[in-house]
Length: 199
Image 1: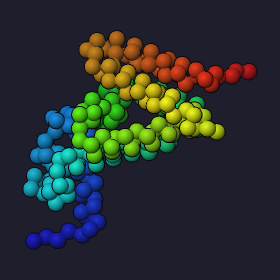
Image 2 (image 1 turned 120 degrees about the horizontal axis):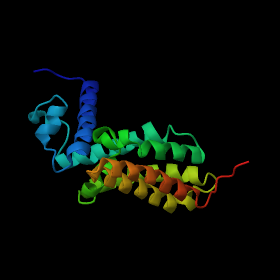
Image 3 (image 1 turned 180 degrees about the vertical axis):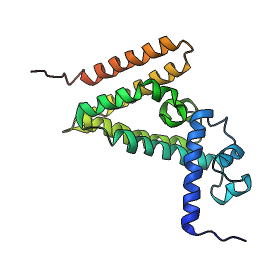
């Protein structure tokens, strides 16, 4: 019997989480069985329980990982202040991001299912969403982020809802127009209390 090192087990577990996150965004939580999730990671069904107690545990862990990755790869790398928020908006409402569901935003891909999921999954999502919201609020009101938290929450809702609707439409031209309008709406929301000053 092969004995794997702790590091190998940690890397394997992380591979399962990462591939599960992509599959969940593409096929949904209910549409992704354990056998498919394990096959994506290059493993057999039988090894699943060596890493997770249940599918629900994997889903909660994958949701948390997806939210962390979105913050680290997109939000944390954006410029400070309003300029960074505009960068995020323009990336978020790009046709490429809309059309790449498995590599895109976990909010827009999974929000409706997360609302019907277990408490640990909903908590994992909430924790990740609060990190995003606080990052948005810090850019909206650098000297008083708590004052901008509710506005940041509605900003996140506007982003996710607009993207979900654009993904659902079969009329490509209308879907693209919705993204363009989404950019205008999001920037208008950002500027509502903080008008841009031009020389």
